Image (cartoon, rainbow, N blue to C red; front, side, top):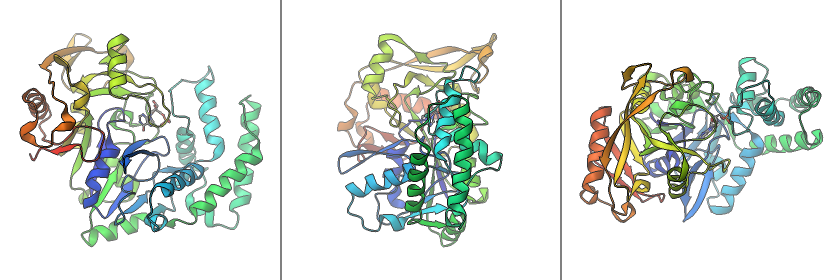
Amino acid sequence: MDILIGLQWGDEGKGKIIDLISRDYDIIARFNGGANAGHSIYHKDKRITLKLLPSGIFYPHIKNIIGTAVVIDPVALKAEIQQVQTITSDSDLIDRILVSQKAHLVLPTYKYWDMYYEDSPQYRTIGTTKNGIAPTYSNKILRQNIRVGDILSKDFETDVFHILNQQYAELEALGQDMPEIQELYTNFLEGCYFLKKLQITDTEIIINEALRENKKVLAEGAQATLLDIDHGTYPYVTSSNTIASAACVGLGVSPKLIDKIYGVTKAYCTRVGNGIFPTEITGSLADELREKGGEFGSNTKRPRRVGWLDLPALKYAVMINGVTDLVLTKADILNGMNEVPICTAYEINGETKTLAAVTFVDNAPRPIWKFLAGWDTPLNKINQTTQVPKELKLFISFLEEELNIPVKYLSTGPQREELIILGN
Ligand code: IMP
């Protein structure tokens, strides 16, 4: 099984890369997160943002698995599938979506808990996507959740009714603005009944059997390394494990069966939500980069914070994930700059570090910069390695030397075909 993960704070362009390399796979499987993800891909010149569906969905030969550690909002999944159905003539679409029966359901009240925690002065404001992700994972650990397989139980409606009523009363007592409970209940049940049309199954057995038959499986990560609940910039992280090893847990696959690990990085950095960001830039330079890169949340539309490439954090992400193949995206956005800044080390409490996980704000690092020559060639016009401008080649070699892994793919624009295989 191969794994593809993001190496920064998300939004590295994973969707496009998976969509492109998917054609070589039999199964694409999501292993973490939920509808907080927003993987943008182009289908027939239309931009589509996938939240819960794996990015192989437009290839008729691919089975798309939503694995056990994904948290599923049935209302969001139904809406997403119906949207995809309007743009594809693929009548087998529904049959190609398999859902782990052990995956946990995002109850409609969980979004309101997310809002409550975000807005209440007693709690930290994380800047979440307000999709109910943290409440779902917390209730998983508390062992209070309803799972996908429970939809098939005869007591399902009654159980949902009781939990919703109880949570609704708690939220109301806390003063949280709520819609009518009946509306939440009905929409949720409709979403769950729609889910029943998909294959609700033991996805870990399907994946392991496929691997035994030498079929190719790609595990698709959501969010990214620096948002990992354990290894990211806690507490400003998501509530799941986002790193490569989480694919094994989330899908039920032995670490012995992992082959390639693709790590995707932008040529600069972005982050949405709060939290430490050592190479962040602000002001007109940031506005320009944000506009040029279209750096607005694909899910929440929030403007993304922007900054330059952060090598100590990238080295850390490469190490934690064991990346074998690097994918570089959005180098085209830096086109036309005289010099491209890269943070090569941090100074933390008088010490220089070239590899670090920054998470404690008291130790806020001071970036040490290197400036590489910029390039000025419209990259979407090129499709061969020999046409890559020499300054960008130097930028790539610099990354390869520092990270000690090859850059396998260079994305040169948002469209599927705008990509060069560097052939290292
Ligand atoms: P949550 O995952 O909605 O709880 O949000 C927690 C943090 O992760 C916030 O800073 C979000 O902006 C961030 N986040 C969650 N999903 C994504 C994503 O797919 N891309 C980028 N940031 C994300």
